[in-house]
Structure formats: structure tokens, C-alpha cells
Length: 205
Image 1: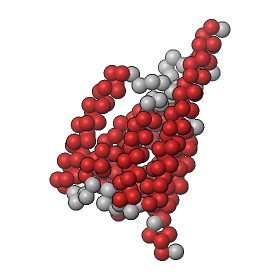
Image 2 (image 1 turned 120 degrees about the horizontal axis):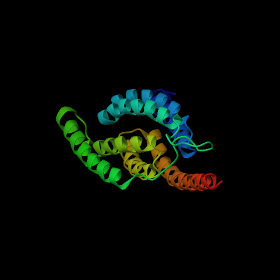
Image 3 (image 1 turned 90 degrees about the vertical axis):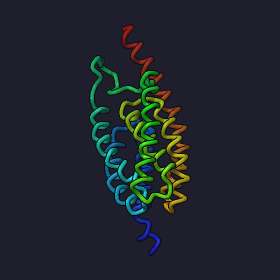
């Protein structure tokens, strides 16, 4: 009982996180609603565990959750009947290079902030996952297929970090995330291909 009391935030956010990624796997808009609740609880959890960058990141996630919900509901400007709102696409190369450079700058900045203004014992890893997640949630909001690669990298590092910080349930969840992300990428790729064929057939009609 004491264990459950001490880890209830970890357990609750783990359950919500599992629901979140399964909805992401299905490309369901309801992932954003589940994510909002998870993020609010995550703010408390990460602050208690001294993961200050992750704690601050949750506020950004909340803002991106609202944006993602709106973005996924909005029809494309050139949308046609039968098309899905905000279809899955590849990230343009120019954006990938630009956001790659932004990631490196953010990683360095967050690392410096953590080492200068906090007592963080894991500034490099915490800064890495935070900076890369900033990119990942943006790519997810735009339904770029390659967002899965970002989350795989984030999930692997986060899994190790959370075991180190004694957040075992959420660490195990991130290990599962890696597996689901791999299958998620394959599913989204099939969905993107099917949608492309559907639109081509619609154009020919």
C-alpha cells in the first residue's frame, strides 16, 4: 500500500501514457485530450523528482496539445471531399535541416540552464530528451511521418534516465513506447500510402 501511495503519480501517468501512444498509433485525435491530463500530472511528478527540464517541458506540451487538437481537426486549405483532415506526410528536407539545427542549439541552451540554475544530476540526458521532444511534438502536430524516429530516440534515452531516477513504471512505459513507435511508424506509412492512392483515384474520377 505504501508503495502505491509513493508511486501513484508514476502509475497514473504510465496508464495515461499507454493510452496516449495507442491513440497516436491509430492517429486518433483523442490522444491530445488524454495527453493534456497526463501532462498536468506530469508537472507535479517531474518537479518532485528533480527533473526540472521535463517539468518545464510539460507546459510547452500543454500549449502544443491545444495546437495539435486544432491542427488535426482543421481541413487542409485545398481539401477535397473524402480526404482526412491534416493527412500524414513526409517532413520537407529544408524543415528537417532547420529543426535539426534548432535541436542542437536547444540542447546546449537547456544543458547550460540546468547546470547553472538547478541541482540536476542528469543535465545532459535531461536536456537531450527535452530539446528533442520540443521538435517531436511539433512534428506530431503536423502529422509528419518522421516524428516516429524522433520519439524512438527520446524514448530510449528517457527509459534509461527514468530507471536511474527511480521512476520504474514510467521507465517501463518508455521501453514499451520504443516497440510501439516502431510499429506506429509502419502503420502511419501504410496509412499515408493508402491516403495518397485514394486521393489519386479521386483526382482521376
